Image (cartoon, rainbow, N blue to C red; front, top):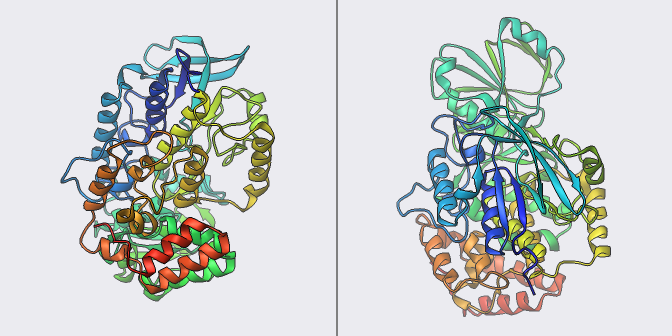
Length: 529
């Protein structure tokens, strides 16, 4: 099997993490990718000076270095647990150089159109330096950019009226708190960027910071009890629990965990979240709640109306502000796709109807990588999806038949109204399952506990199945060794977790899980340190 991609020209739209890892894996399968990047360098959002980047000065990742990496290029030893944006930009340039992607990148090349051209695809581009336009034919196209390049503005009465007396900007344009010294700033939105920007502003005591949002969320710190949050919350055990428990039981258990490690935001002056965690949602920021507790960030509910220089809130309170930062997310921007394509995809501002978030049976040769909203780390997901795509196109991964693919697309279309951000462990399980690289829990007893209760480190998906690598065990051990003190203990299963694992194995009828639970109960599987 395989060989279907040999010599084929593939346009990869976007030079961010998704585009780079897509190109890397297409090269490995014999394709000839061309990466089309609109800005003057690769990196996507991590190219801080690019017009489309939402990265600000001094910003660090909100995911640990273990989970902000690809499987075959570990970060340098000594890198901070939560690296700076500049570190991630350098990492992506090193990745592109190491795997032969750099020489296949065309920078300052904006894609302006994609349409069918016989059995291939016509891609129109514009040179951002000269204005020259051209059209090229490619055998295949990978759309790996545009998910976080079009700011979403809040639907607030009077948004335009505020501007004559104050400044309104989107979080995508926030660069430094120095611009706001001595000002009264309202940050609207409590996703990660909203909480981080409010916290960054509050570091300057001359800035009066107010944080407002339509929906109160539970808020986790990046480091919980000395361990990165993404090591604790995005695990294979969590994914299995989500499959075995009914939604109400899952939400209740999750709420209990959140209250135990993070508390109720209302207890320190924040907004009271809906008790149903699945309705309220979860956000993350290391300093936000502490700053609320210290009075350095004032908290308000949704904005009901804006007037020149004044905001009125849903609770009837009003406040005068010099600036508003709208941290209200991004709309999917695939306007360069032909209308026929967008219709087939059922494209709106958030979703595309796709099998495994990647392919549509009526659009052979067109694929999508990273065109979803994930809750948690992105790099491992992008790599898994790129590996799945390359394997499917090359014929080394069988994939579903057309009927099953259509059924999967329809099931996703029906589920769209109930979906928001999809948890990392759910998407990782989807991609790894379709690719056939879910690691065995019993083949390597010394890793079993880590694979179940530890982080979903990228190297874990190189242990088994297509693309398995001989050095994966060593890479995984290295990733786990980067853990701060206490991480191994946090991942060690106790009697309660082992009991839950036995319940899951019974509900799902999973023989391997049953065997792993029995070995753990007898203490025959060590916790990898």
